[in-house]
Length: 100
Image 1 (tube, rainbow, N blue to C red):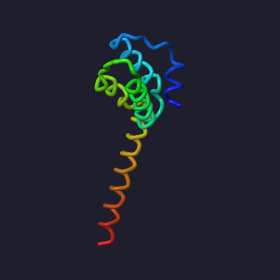
Image 2 (tube, rainbow, N blue to C red):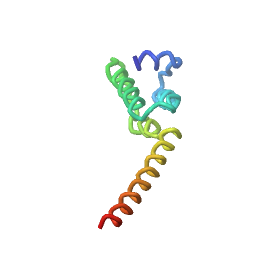
Image 3 (tube, rainbow, N blue to C red):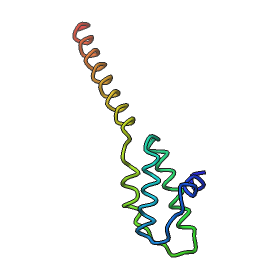
Image 4 (cartoon, rainbow, N blue to C red):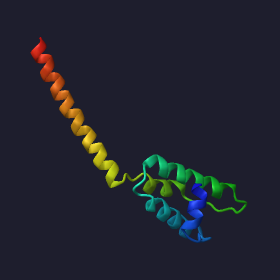
């Protein structure tokens, strides 16, 4: 599934540096999706290129870094979760002082 979507993204260049930029562009186009989804997509693309008979050597560390960038939506969800956690902790500590 991921390989098919990646191949529909556009014609992949044959030069390793251009191919690296192409893969990074595809992964960044998945920006609103979760980190896990983008990570699975990257793994599928990596498996595809490793299974080819061509000796294409790609810098997967460089490719993986932009894939790990959290989307704005994920960052907002994390912030809201932290705020809720702080409110709950304050409520519990206040309740514990009253019950003692």
